Length: 633
Image (cartoon, rainbow, N blue to C red; front, side, top):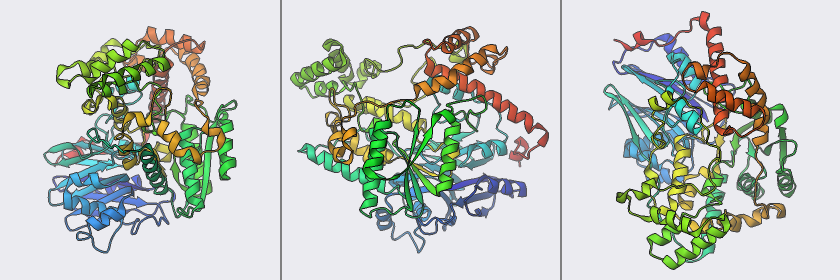
């Protein structure tokens, strides 16, 4: 894990001393080494790595090649394959960043697709006089940039870049995405400051900025085996690899354990690898966050007994979902106290890695309604099988067979007819029952929210009809960078075995009915991992949530906002005042109010208030920022 930041002026002016000092401050963090830098005409790159890391050779040094300089943050999982492919382009330095630089010099930006792992990088291409910023397909490692005038600056951390660049203006498009979708793809709360999109390369030159995709959804992939046990064997092999490559050999490791099948499978696989000597962390510790009457308790305690690992339990009673003061840092975020507490635990036990079970529901087929599979049978003209499967889904979902068949028929039509694009892809019971909305009509029109799909790409539409729902869900996860390390955990290897690219590609390429069938969500997972779990987990069919914990934090905040005469979200024209007041009153009484969207409004309001408070405190400090005069010759 490392931090990276820098600046490039395309008129090749000298980098001012205050700029280079600011950039080096951007990459400083407790436990990290002194920054290493690259300086050339108009260009300054800085990089700082975790001290004492032995994951790869030369981890702590910024790499400079004959035609480029590169900073690299993350981990490569296919190092050995790349060393063979690039043996003619590599010298004695075989660090991950040297491999990434050789891949770029050998294959160009498209070659970045061959880098499998959690990573982001910055390359100064001296021959093309260009800065290239890129992030892996899952967008796990953060990287932000601001390109204006004749310069571009970037940083792994958002707040230093905002302070340094003087980017204080709120981006209305981000706000629209946050209120409508919980977040906004390819945006930050600040105008002109953007995250590098997952699976893309951002090329910045004197002529402008171009964003180019180097990784595509595997919509055309199709894997079929003669026997079901072959799918199980392949899944076990890929999952072991996904977990093993994420366990450090030189430090302690925290593993999230909620008691659900996803996190339990990660912990079980890590424990087995530890027992077999396949991984050798200094210490492997599970971390469980639970509330007092959690239904998960029998399951995570069963896992702890079964594997005998060190365990840490954290109660949500001391870590509220959101408060007036705890609303995230540079961007709005829930559960800031929990994340900061996790970071403190990691420091105490010497952990450099935090492994989660995120994305497991999606890739392992935890779909109660996956009746879109019927469309695949209709497409293949297997009408008898389509009717039988539709009848099976009808019994499980308790909806008419005609509805399932009709939706499947529309999905199976050729795209040029247009019907498939209009077909509703969510399930009969998916989505909130209460869709009440307080977004102001003028704001909705101005930001393009009238088109619900305008914020997200539609590449998923080219997948087989029975797979479109899965690819659409994955695309939203990736475009929102939902797997990115939260701000308080950015200094850790925050990583997710279920986002291992070979695993994701495999599970989205095999027949959908292998992964999930009517009444059998996670079918393949349950068959493949059954022996990993203690008996209690093998029968588990549901999982507890934290909805009650969230409401306990939100209800008093609703009462507090009702007492205020002025609300930022209303003054800025984001939200309709009367609608918001009515919904806050119902929330305070625990009545139906479309709570998922209302919690985003409450978070945004509190965050904007805190943002204003921070600005007022620093108003007299006159921080040195890059103003518009810095961009002119």
